[in-house]
Image (cartoon, rainbow, N blue to C red; front, side, top):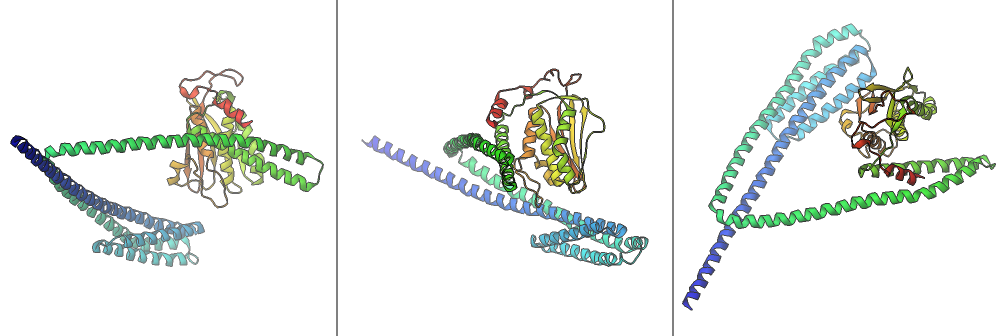
Length: 482
């Protein structure tokens, strides 16, 4: 009986002691973790603020250089385009100054920003004087005044910006050192705590492993749920697109009957409008089917030997009237190409139609659009060029994303054309890319496998690789379309 009592007290004491150790470890780790997270969050915010300040300062330098270059261009040429760019650069500079001023509480940084603002104000004031004088003085006199009066002010502005950026870089270097030192001390404290309570840490590790296991299982469940949702969405898109085909076909049929009948002109006009809307709906449904097929990774093509000249002629027939109506020059290759590609003609025409259609939409009246195709190793490289507004640098990486659209007033679209074009080209084993200079136009390129020494009426062997395999999915989509 006494032994049992002693054993009971021993187990009770052991359990209490173990509980105290576990509580101490848990409390210490929780406090250390909360402290570490708090310090880490503070450091991240500080580093982010410092890096943002450097970024804003660099943008400010760029805006200052833009003010100088555009002002010089206007003084030399008198072109009002340079004057507008000068105003835009001045607005960007003012925004940068406001951002830097609002984003810092450091007295030294504020002093540097104030110095930059003062030097910029002096430069811009004198520049405005020369801009106003541009209407009454000759260009040589203005250029001489620019060198003698503005260049020193420009140097002072550049020196102020350099001092500001050097100060910001020095400040963020100091911040990195402080962050590294404080984190090192926190790691030492945490390691000491874990070392003292190593026995109890095994239990905590088991608990954490259990929690992580539950979290992992929850994540897997959520992932499977999301995959089922995506599959259901694609299935719904396919069903909706398929079910809408029949009523659209009926609309088109009745519209054609009305348009070809002997009724009044008003009836024919309404019939043509019905037909146009139905065709637009049919095009959107086709795009939905293409997007769903591309996203599922099942887009297939039926590649056959196809003459490049035939593809180009087809596109010219499509857009000849639209280009003439907009007074655009549609340029074809100087010599008729004898190249033959291994491609699905309808799909490649769809790619060219998207590219030329975009060029026609965004190229201003009187512009030029050219189509060319040249051999590039074992491929044929197509290119569609225009001299429209082009695409800014930050958008080049996303133009082939789904739903990306060129933000231009009055220009509507679904944002699916380039995404579908990319999927079609890659299904052929080729690639598609873009080169653009804002204000000077854009050029789209894509490649298709070459059939060397093969006529368009002959067979063209595949060059290997899964991209050349053919499945029944393309035929299934064509069946849905009809």
